[in-house]
Amino acid sequence: MRSPRCSVCDRLVSTGAQVIAAIPEFVIAALLVAVLAVWLEAFPRVSLVPLGGTPLARARTLESCHDPVATATRLARARLADQYMVYETEGGVWHFAAGSAVSVSAHANGITARAAGRTWTADTDGPPLTAFAAALSALRGGTGRHFYGWAAFELAHLLHADAEATGDDTLLHVLVPSVEVTLTGDRTLVRAVDQAWARKVADLLAEPPARRGAPEQLSPGRTEEVIATGAAAYGRTVARAVADIRAGLLEKAVVSRKVPLPAEPRVDFSETYLAGSRANTPALLPDGPRRVPGGRIQSRDRAGGRRGRTCEHPAARGPRARGTDPVENERRRAELLADPKEIHEHAVSVRLAWEEMEAVCRLGSLAVEEFMAVRARGSVQHLASRVTGALRPGAGPWDAFASLFPAITATGVSRRDALRALARHEPGPRGLYGGAVFRGSTGGALDAALVLRTLIGAGDGVWLRAGAGVTAQSSPEREIEETCEKRRSVAPYLRFAEDRPGTR
Image 1 (cartoon, rainbow, N blue to C red):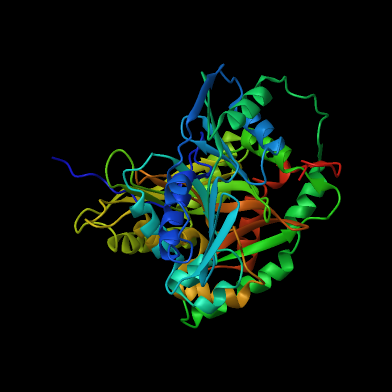
Image 2: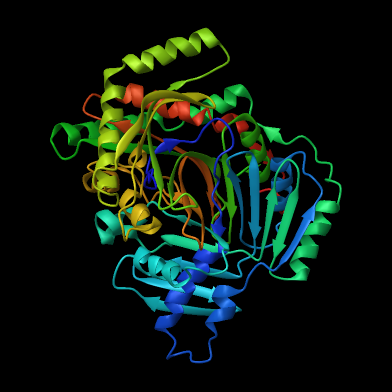
């Protein structure tokens, strides 16, 4: 009998629909169970069953949805709760999750859980994923609910490099939603914790969409100005990284470039999400009290699922611009396949993906199922490979996540040395950029998507961010151009609006 496959691949999201992460409730509930077990003596009246096991009992199937992305965007714009997420899965299926029946946040030294209007905190001696995995194990065989969440890039320092570099911000956040809406071409399914939530969403979907004026957007000239911002400073950062590599401190670093946007006009994240989703491969729109990111996902890891203990991890590097001229696109494709720097960089990424998977996969099960294919993604085209394997006995999805996070395409080689180099050369924390968004289930499935080429908002700031892989063969000029090519997959779809509720 053929053994279950574990495909742990840093793979490109295809041109069609792909995962946009939301945090299934069960993950949060599982984590909460593990955390609350520690505090049971201190809080003897806490009931674990209502917090970790309350199902989304109310379900309604509504009429078909002819434009799932527009409907998901409308639900997000309605701001039904402080926290919500829009998540796109393969096959053109969209999920909207809102409300936090349970939420759990992990920091460098502790975990905070919130449920039923109460808050619990506890210190942790080890990495947050240890408590996370224990919580999932506690819920095995439970109600089959989903959870949604994200991991900040700085979690990598705690897992692989220097714990002191993690900072004080949240590293991992999950939520169990109060309501979930699944949108396909032929039906709309609403599931909620109670009748009030189900009715609220059903009534909103029954209303005709409000007429909205055309959102403001940048002129082509202004778009190019935004794309070019900070080029000289980024070139100097690349030069310093190349010097480190040539001195033998590391082999490769993925150095990012952050471009703050003006405070006015304000970015309309909902309209930007909608425009980007229509013109590109997937965009992401999570929201919460502390961050409002929107952007695109390049790769995703998979672990677990109905097919057995499986996992996927794609490796993608070396973008070239992609436009409307097929002849020019083919010329750039041939150039990409003949570029020694890009080929070397990609081969290094595949090698490291293989080594990372060896830690969680069965001996002899690893295979490179795809190598150096050219994949189109919106305004760019990439080299893409996929490494697969079968999870070893005793390894679960969070073991794979801990081994593979963050993706090679967001850090470098070796990962520890690259993380230290990035801490030296990049100003401030990355936050969600280079981190992951994910969706999972109590059955053991987990989709984790790498966040790159991203529009992010936090507090009063909004910025674009993209990066490029730097090796000993890199030149500042080429890496600057690479980041410009990547920004062109986001910047033309920026939409702006007046400063009114719901436009950010």
